[in-house]
Image (cartoon, rainbow, N blue to C red; front, top):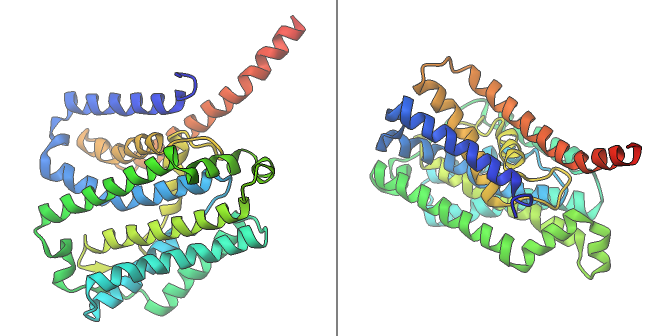
Length: 318
């Protein structure tokens, strides 16, 4: 049991240590309103990390999520600025995100193209198209959009609560549903999955669609937090999502990982920046420490895979 969930347990332990240290040396870290604000700001990125986990489980990758996030945000913000009702804008943004994911999925699953090449192309295309269309101009949102028209505290609670509900549903589907078993099977061995009666290409296609839809939903939750939409929003979002998944125990080679491990990894990486601020450490150490955590996680994973072979070789030579 411990060996199976070694990474998840290790990350959760590291997160607990950080939280305990903050409780001892910087108890103001846990003040109610600032803590809720930090969680709310991170909530949209958590959804994208969850979708990225599904993609990585199938042995694929999507580095276009930042651009899709920005596209959905700008389009959704423009519709809201044109006095479209929120109830109409949200489904359209989800559809737009799903459509962007469907394009990636069709090229990867249908034509067999490498996912990193396809999503690199769509990332650049969408980002440059937004840059040309907006020319750096922000989209101003109506006041009714802020926090769904509620008070800030109530709106923040709604954002965190809704993201939590979506996360639990994803975790249940991944662990208990047939779709989750399909993802693990395809990521572990696509050919064996095909011989077992599954359809790896169909599974891969719909996984990209789901990631696109989750990215669109994340953009909606981002829209309600600010009075303007930045057309450059979402930069480095793909790196943050992949880092959270890798630290949380998801194998880049596919077929292994859990959303609860990703949650722990995401919270650990998200805590580093605010923790440094509360401890009086210069903020430029944030990315350096995050990079070191990711490198340590990947190195530990590689060591665990290589250790049986090393021990076997020693026994043979001994």
